[in-house]
Image (tube, rainbow, N blue to C red; front, top):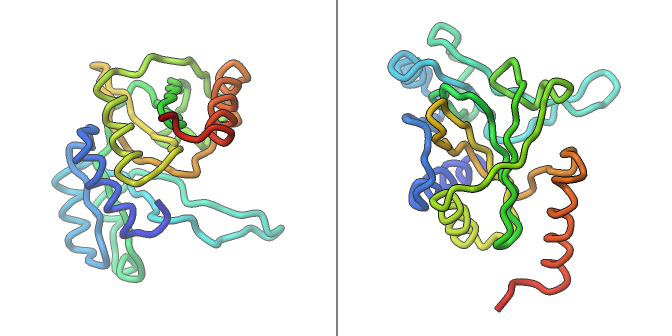
Length: 200
């Protein structure tokens, strides 16, 4: 969800769809003291941007803001300039990207990232399809229905007890970098959806 308000709404909707959220989530606007208190009480805490930036390098290549750990001392008055999202970090053993196309769900376990944001380390990652727990499938489909979506890329953290912790849903999330044996069924599901629409 691109706009800050929509991302907050998305978190509330995910909770209503019984997707397990972080043990603490704090969407924060402009108040450094509240953010420092949250980081102190619920650490370790991650910072996440609420939307893509317009930053570019010297060649014009777009830049992004990575998900990073934050400690209370790093929060200062610069926070007042825009909205931010702080979330308690999941003690995870792996990440999961679940691509939903209508009723078709494809979940992939992502291993090998040395840091909290696996997008920074594509050359180190390995991928393995995994079954979707029934409760997760129900929550994902309820979420899509709540927002009127036919597609969603859902990100989860997998903890050491095998519990899926939902991070977010990107309604325009990427999937084509996965190996062919993962992307081929997704491509077929998208083509079927475009050709036939939702099944009656």
